Image (cartoon, rainbow, N blue to C red; front, side, top):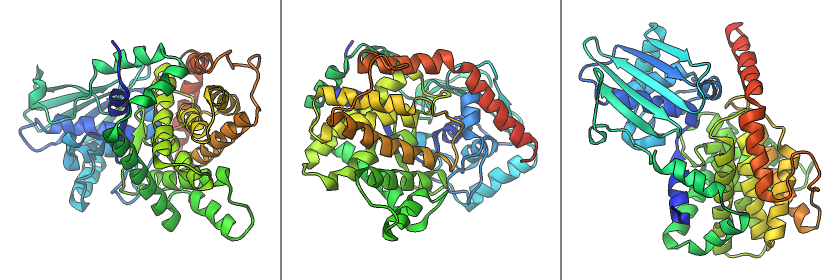
Length: 435
């Protein structure tokens, strides 16, 4: 079975409000609550280690700076609309936030870490005193695979959650793994006006976050700090710095809990920021048409999806660096007029540079990593266009970009399992020591 570029964009790119790990927990809780007859009185949650890690410290939008997966679940119960998918928390208001905080404060939310669970997994059980409703999210952040009431599995038509194409995604990932970089570039010929408008909506969505970050400096304020350095003439604004400013400013807003959606890529809002914004940032430095920019962004999403098909949705490796970063570097090289060899070189350059960046959960500090990924993506492309390419004999770099990206997958899924556990162990020790 083969897919077209429209299929890939539809399945891999979507708006998401807030960090996708707590949002996925809220989605599961909201999907279960939707079929519960009475008022919810208790919530039990079970999550895999990577959902736990990524949702431990990140601010939830619309809460005034609050965090925690237990709270995210409670927010899904009292303020979520599962029909909105990854924008499940859009309806939040002060009343629903207070109800969620009360449920957590009264000890009526339990969060269980499934230490040995592999792959993305969330189970939410909501009780009203007489009935129990359960929803399960698996493999993808918005993939509600089942909803049941009192142990009876409900038909999908009776659930209000957005059910992702759970049967399609494994086939898509298996198919895309078999493609060559040249095949991904050829897919760009199939883009139509609807696809281009969708890609442009991704630009508008993510630029809104960046503009908020530059204006108000939420989160760590990395984007605003870099912009201020330019204004003070302490650094010069070039392609690389423009990409860093725009991308980190958007991440500042998103990780700072600003209630604005991000256009995600491969299940991650920060991936979407990295895949889109560096390409948008450099357009002002060159001569190009909007059509070229949107094709470059499409390629960025395709390469990001290719890498994530090998690494998995969540891992110990920072996907913004090696997956969306690789996508952005490919897109930049394409937009700058590079040929297939230049695009391949850009991908290999950034993976050699950033393969060691770990994922230690979602939090304000991710903006630093996005600044690095965005700037390095542009740099990797510029190097390749100047004939600077890492050698195939270097470390994990393969003879081809495909082999290099596959090696990152092997490193992520086989080599860093214990690293992931150690990262979570450190984070848990900090949390429970009152740090």
